[in-house]
Image (spheres, one colour):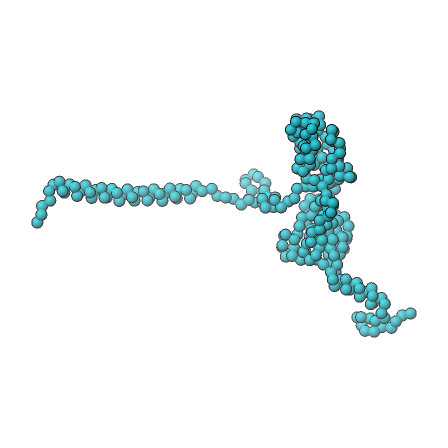
Length: 261
């Protein structure tokens, strides 16, 4: 039997202690890492829905809805506040004339109808550059002309409809008394001028809009014309009424009738 020296015994004992300390240290390291991860998960911010209101605040519209709203287009009859930040003597309140123009100091007549306020600001800034150094101008729509759309075609009450605010195509048709049975609801036309020389025509499928396809139930703009065409079957019925029933002595419902002279 071999006898270990005191020095060897001390060395082995020291190694055992060091190993134990290393194991304990590794365990503590893992424990600290796990605890840090737990704290990080608990402190992560909670993202609230866009449409959820904070306490004491009104709910804000969804960004997607805000992006979908087109800028307001200036129309004849609108009243505009034109403000110059560094030249208050040029401030004016003007009404857009029936020809779509406004009259201002120094630059005289400017076309305003058909433009957004941002577009008009850019035009005014360019026109005032020869007179003012770095003009700072703002355009505010102070009063709105009575906004209106027109609905025609296969509706029960065709004519002008006043817009009290937001109005989509389904609301406009409902305000016109609804569509007749002869209406072609999948090919409704929206004619939009928007200050353009040639009007833009938008084809709308109202049948899809009724099935909650919001892309078809478009928002109307002032002075849009909504035209509801007549279906092909309705055209055939009209032709039958004009050319057969009124010219041939035949009762299409109950057989042959006598001609009346």
